[in-house]
Image 1 (cartoon, rainbow, N blue to C red):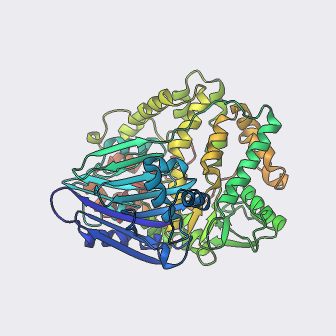
Image 2 (cartoon, one colour):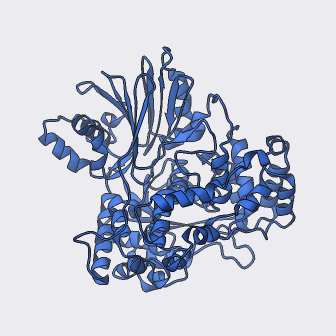
Image 3 (cartoon, helix red, strand yellow):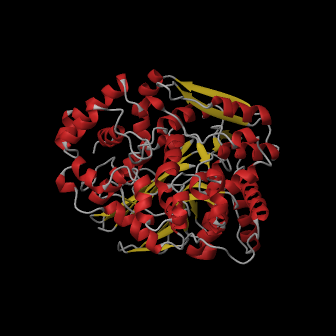
Length: 589
């Protein structure tokens, strides 16, 4: 896990290594162990290293293979790199390191752009071909690793974080109205290739991009998620449970790859508890588990320690409880906003941020349960879609934070034109390789919402402390298996039915049958005291007034009753506005 950055020019000028170094400096937390930079002519590539696989200097980046004429910068982990190394060795390739980085280089030389089909893992990388001068960039199937870029005025730049591209300014910092609509309506999810800034794009998951020396771009989607049964799939419920459990065993085992210990972010829910149980069955010694909790607000409980304690006791883990009081939470919010590559509204960002701070004191790699709800149908809006005659409307009613009418009341008229969010859902449902309405929603949530909400949140908040998070539920083979599983099996028992039954063979029933929980941060859901003052200062301040995104009368309506204006998903509409404004101020936009 690392941070990457680079620049390629098409205007006859040489690449600026100083600019690339400044981008790297802004991402130092992503790679605290080392950094490196190479510049030659029109191209400069930089890397911040978090040493996980091959801790020696031979694994350092940028990695140059002079024999093959390739240079790479890479962020992520290829879990099957040993297997691929054996294949490539059999084809005559010689290796100078044990790193997965070098495996990517050899695989690209051997198989060209088709190399990405062979990788099992999470990745974002850029390869420079010395002879042709071209760049090849790729992102993993589920977008676990980020890759942002700009392409204007004769120069192409890329980085693992959007704020790194802001370091030396952009030609324009104009907001993208479609992206703003998504942020305000589509639960703050801004789908690739958009970001809130018109000038900055992000490579979509499951895609690669080839950049020629004249600036010509070729982009290709190499992976799509298909729903529906195939020949050889399980025939009954028991066989599906067997298949799901075996796929999860393999996914967890794969994510033990590396030369450092692996821990678990244990919430006490089904997903992270199953990962903990499977790791214990793998015989991982001295397994560290970590749980965070917050102060209660009113009748809302701020921790789920009793469930995580049960799992830790069952499997004899070295368990760490991290309790965060309101004062500590507020003190660290500025750091949390600095860590956000894009504004993210979920209250549990600060939870992951502060938990990662403590976890990084013990381990460099953790496994996390993100993705199970989207992949195995765990959310409450899926069952009604089984018989839906208006899937777009039904989905929007339960998931959208605002309808278009309210959004028009909230933001400046010059930033509102069309109902971009509903149009996006309609287009995605129409194009999805799925027939049933619920499968269309699962497809959308797995390939879009998951990528630009929980997955991005985990990457940003863990990497803020030099911690690598691995997500077994996003193993692409697990995701593909779940997509083929009949929806009624997934949605049974209130959601994730097939996963729950498989998990009963590993973890206590009390964890499986408990009421569904979320990462609770009551202090940001119910804005009071210092947290409310912070929000008031941000939205009534001079910077917000000059920016003019939000209509003052809408802001005042929310401020007059800060705890009453909740979204259908029970998030604070006021906090959502504040997050955007504070993020823009934090990153100088």
